Image: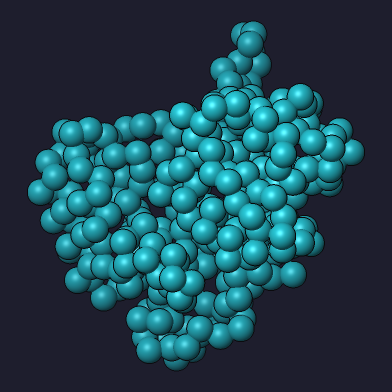
Length: 301
Ligand code: GUN
């Protein structure tokens, strides 16, 4: 039976360390860290994610604000609010919540964020730093997964890893971080032939396909480490019941075979939020000329 990689537990430890770090540095800083989340439109899942991020900020002492534009907002209006946040000294981090409704141009909006405030790590400068292995703000979900793997004692050196999904939010940065940890990485996507065959070869699977229950028992080798990035709402089956959440992996089928697996919910999701908090605190300290100390190391043990 697989060990669970518990994102809730690790994120809570992470929050405790960030709370202490903020309290300590507030003695010399004028303002607490500030995070602004730009939300466009009324995608319900985005609403939940944004609320979770704001609540997590409150728990550690980050001041958060949500700038909510209607789905009918123009590119210029959203750009204007990003420019204002770039120039606002009490704002240390800016996150533009994805997906962005069409016809708005997500690339241009992400490019408009000041790279020093880009706590999502999606600005080309920060993605370039990631590719070059230089210090910089890292994408939150891949960074959170690396922290979970490290905490679980997974030795990545030489490991055969398969990342399913090639988005700039998860798949691409994940593949780079795993390579930098000396894993041998394959990236699969919607055009990959015989995905099941690739899955069976993998010793580490990171599944960010956006397809509920894609990976089942017959797709995995015994002893595999499985990281499930999927998050899908399953409506209640009967009246009076609650809806549930499920991932891209059939958890019940894979758990008996795997060596480690992340649950949904409670695996990757909380770690994404923890890394956002970490990036915001890092941006706060760096913008005040601070040096990132070891107390801000992203891997509390
Ligand atoms: N939508 C779902 N997850 C994320 C995330 O980590 N960052 C942003 N910006 N949007 C998201």
